[in-house]
Image (cartoon, rainbow, N blue to C red):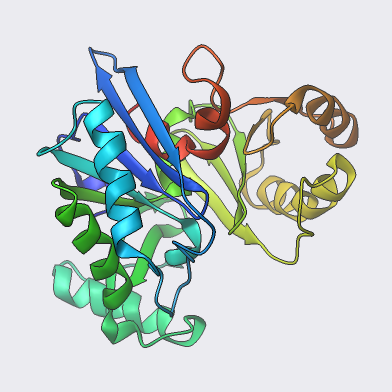
Amino acid sequence: MQERKTVVRLPHIACEVSSRGVAAARSEGKPRSIAATHSRALAAGVLTPALNAENIQDAQALREAIEQVLAAVGGRGQDIVAVLPDSAVRVTLLDFDSLPDRKSEAEAAVRFRLRKSMPFDVEKAVLSFDAQKTQQGLHVLTTIVLRSVLDEYEDVFRSAGCSPGVVLPSSLAALGAVDGERPTMMLKVAPDATSVAIVKDEQLLLFRSLEGLESGTPTAERMADDIYPSLVYFQDNHGAKVEELLVNGISGLDGFASALKEQTGIEVRELIGSSIASGNLRHDFAGAIGALL
């Protein structure tokens, strides 16, 4: 798995898979804009995202869906950004005083830190990490996925006639739609995972997966309670208040946004606006779109 910041040139096609369906997007121009999108729903049970279990239950159905959406945006036979469900990949932020200069030694140090917190053998996983200097030392963004799980996804993409040149979890891909200069929280709600990220000065400073959320659309009151610890932690540790809250994965956002603003005092808006994509594409497949922006 490659972490996005290490890639010099991203493909112009992205394809995201989730338990709900598959979507592809194509970008063009500089700065990039979304030129074409297409999605297709999946039957229940075709894909069941998990960290340490088989994810793809019906490879033929998933392959056919990928083929269809890629053909619709002109992506067959090309390198693509493959966007995976958040529940299949663990994203973690770690702090180090320093790391060895040699990449293999730095990776060993990161794996050692992750060993006790992962529900699988980290030596059987693919690790990507990006270290950024801070006043306190190093802030290290890590993504780790079991090799067997990654192989499942890469194999089905290749069988669909494309090359997964870059692989990203959905939430990190969706951050491409965030202007990371001022303190901003992204809240990404999905059936398999609800993720919270805070960026400032183009750095990802907080990332958390919320657990124990009730099924169905969450209420603004419940969501405010769930993100409150992250807001307090960020303010206490980074000396700044979140100025904007970008929400993805909730249709009919207007009422939810108003209630969430009332609860938090923070301006709330949609992560992917209707001018960029429509309908379920912007609600369910922000990873495919954000990966190209």
